[in-house]
Length: 314
Ligand code: SF4
Image (cartoon, rainbow, N blue to C red; front, top):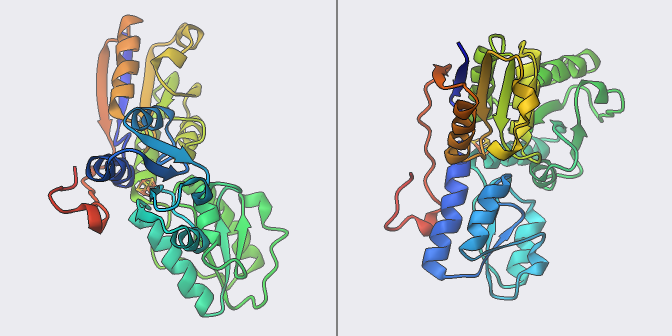
């Protein structure tokens, strides 16, 4: 029997849902155009749908006309970006995920206490750029377990690691282990920086991977947590794993000789894209779908304060 194992939880997390709603409500309340600094979330379909409704995506606040409304994306911004927005007299609405804001607060607090902060994350990712901007003199980026040799600290007794929210849990444990060999007094963050959504989606994909000949993850290439799901699936025993933006990206060769297809989606991928993938698979004979739940999830974040009136979290 050809079947699909559908990972749960998958798809939208509370931070992405809130960020997308923030742009939607801002469009309703203030009218188009609403400027959004960077992609609101890393998904090309979501960005295209918001563009259709009047959102204008820009790289920097300098690209927003003076006095305009600008939304900061879910990945967060450095303090200098807020200062630039104020200097340009922009109306800024902050859609930074509260779990990213938490990491920013940790960075400020440890920097104020004189710690060197080893930030585990991917070079150039918007979240890492934003977090580093909170205390650039105290933060060094560590991009994976092999990147620890170059790290230099002022006082090995005052070193802490923090991380990007969307990393592989297993690889981060490995990186911390390598850092701790060099710095035995390395302190841990007060609570997990890798967010609940990233952890839960990885746990779910692990549950289906070993039984799947191929795993298909719905998400965009620049979505860190989606790319991690593909890697986690392969590490957990999937025959192969692919990242697709939508059903049209599925190649028929991937399904040749296959009995079980695993399906999941990254935290920025809307469920209608998963539905499209399931439909495509059903047309190819994979019409028996079994949902495999690893963790029950109920997280919801309230909208930014100024947009809350008359609205509730979805
Ligand atoms: S993946 Fe995690 S940190 Fe990122 S927006 Fe979602 S809940 Fe927030």
